[in-house]
Image (cartoon, rainbow, N blue to C red; front, top):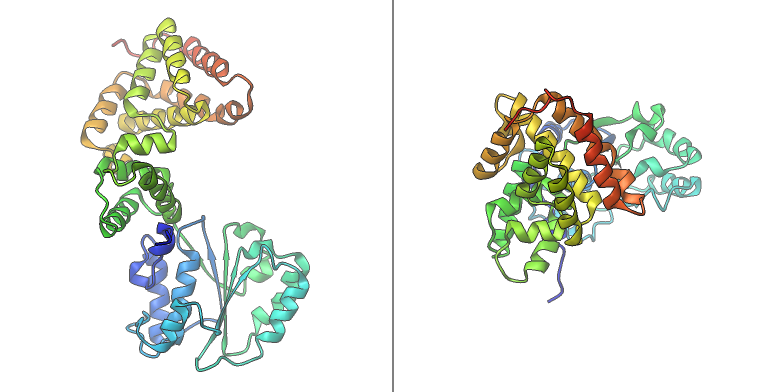
Length: 371
């Protein structure tokens, strides 16, 4: 059987299936239920958080013959057509490859035609910020006063590139990044459906690597599933696929920094380098670890932010007590600023060694507590 990517296989088909965007799905359901549908919408936010999926669900709902409180029934002929991508009343346009003024002029001619066996014709324009200035100008009049049977949904990851004249004619919805807890729960549901066993720690690492994107999270999970090949998904397997560093190694690195053990630190960096680890990713992990320590030290409920396992959290919490906040802030700034440098240097190990030793020598004697 042909493999289908998890993010495609488990793309939400109803408003209730969408996670992390309740402020948007509820507003859209209310508009549909109350008969107050707008003529132009703008969906903006990071990649992979549901813009196109919600646009398709909305397109399905406005033409659904028996929608339920604004949600599509999924059973009528109109809903089934859209699910099989055979609905001629829903037109998706990729503005990255159809961004010329002639493309928009052609669209303006087509919007005049009424929908077939439906109430609305819905145009979903993805990556709308890629349109040229002349294309935006061509779209403007139609967007301002479209035929009553037409709804425009503009989706973009770079809303700042849109002209103010376009923005002022749309109902705008800003999509949020999805929380680690929500991503972990969705991932668990998907893997359960696929009959794949896993450790909870592994799901948490995958969800964090997804950085708020549902699509990225499921794509990473696809890679981990392929690597595990039928075996239980473990935290070690996820770290190997991501090239990330286990928390225990970062704790050891920071302990050596705090103790100012130059020889031990150089030996540790050599050991990390000998495993073939990408040092650019390693430095990113070090910056993140410094942030975790700072959160543990300064926040009242740190694990509500970090979402770590109990054992890992306790280990990091104990280490945070050995550092002053000022030192941790310097660690974050230094390691975070060196990430791009490491990516392009001819000798990343030398650069990491220099960076670590410079940070150690730059700290005042009272900035790090004695162990």
